[in-house]
Length: 353
Image (cartoon, rainbow, N blue to C red; front, side, top):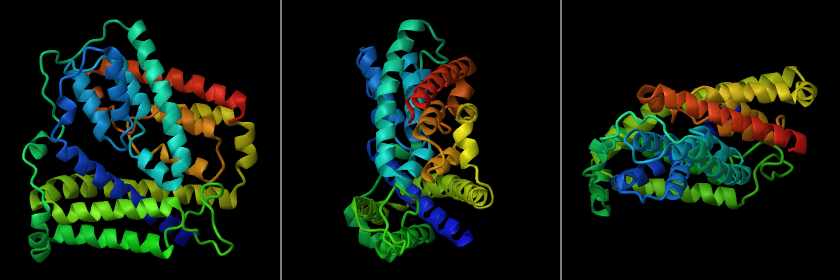
């Protein structure tokens, strides 16, 4: 059991980091596209904020918070983004059950747009901390002059740094695990498996390999400053240990619980209680605790409605800078999303999701 948990943890953490590295690169080469002047259309602001919020990880959520605090986005857009954002858990969900994660995000997108429009109607005035400042603070020193080109690839390989070597080694191990079937999924109704327990090749495996090859290209062409400051310092040092430990802890806890205690009858009889717990945990502005509900859904123990409700309330740690900038806005957003999550969870519960 322990070996299986470790294998699953390595697989999930590897894929999470692959996607995070790719998104970091896209964010940097965009050269601060988030700071472009927005239309005066409040609807367009809500759509933009929702799309940013749906970006896995903290990048999109941080961008929305900064744009709101500098009066570039309205409060409805901020609320919609926090509904759409599921933090690092989004990476994990797409690595564990990509098809259902896509469905979940599609439904949340519609809910976020609707709630954003309603919030703008109900809340006309919300305090903006810095109405006269319009600059962004998300990695501004790193995206002003990014240098990366294919011409630098040979030089980068010849003078291979420790950080680049470690990242490349980890990526090659990830690709090897996917190709050889070492990183197969083990949950029922999520992926198809053979009678021997190994994954059948399908769209997911191909997608994972394509993502890996794209990241390989990025790791080869970026310069040392970009790799050191953005990929190594931001992704590996800040996220790797947290993702690995939270994933390992959640999977091990669930595995032990499922092995020694049959909680399925209790969960079936007390789903309203579990729904309440999922909503309260979602209030925590931190990625990690919500992985418990992701893992329970992955194992088939929890229904879709509870994961759906938890995903609406939680936003990873996207709202942490909002708590620092405007506590009133933070608690107001969390309160609104808690109500929306409760309504969504109850609807799902009574519809038998």
